[in-house]
Length: 267
Image (cartoon, rainbow, N blue to C red; front, side):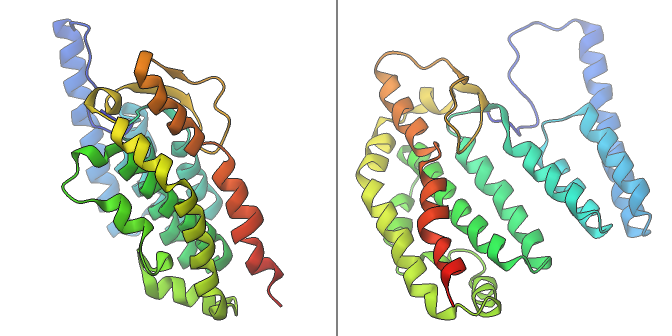
């Protein structure tokens, strides 16, 4: 179960009235989303945005609705609001350990689309590296249950800048006048990933279904996370120690102070 699932497990037995209200809420939500989609087709974008917001109030944990709202706001040239929607769902109010980094990488993927449209090339490159890092962490949390050894494949890639939309990355580097830095940016990212590969594998080997399904709340990626609420105990604490280490500010510091500084310092 994760932050953006359509339904959460609920151990509380609901009354008939609660069940009825829940079904009505879902029906109302779906109706609002359909109406919003139609209004967008009719170029009634402001009305569509209002309906999506109402739908999100009914069912606040559906990631696709937030993406739709962000896209509609961006189409209406309300760009600050569009990015604010994505930033809001980055704050993990509730999730499971197995889905935190995967959900975060999905959000970053949507943000990349907006950044490229806005020709925010420097931010695009930085966000791309965040996407790559979180996708690798996601595989480190879930790899024991995956058919392919994606962790090793991603880390050993000959071009870490080409995982998604390589033509967009090339465009960003070209527009910034730093095409010559592509190999160096790859090297800097590769060196960091190789330096933590051993611990990433240890975390992967510690993962199990119980850990993956463990709830976590009050968690913020890239911060010290002193106030998190998580129920892992005993030997599973070893996994949690790795998880918090990789999701701390360490990578953000490396990204800003080592990788991205090369773009700023390029003549």
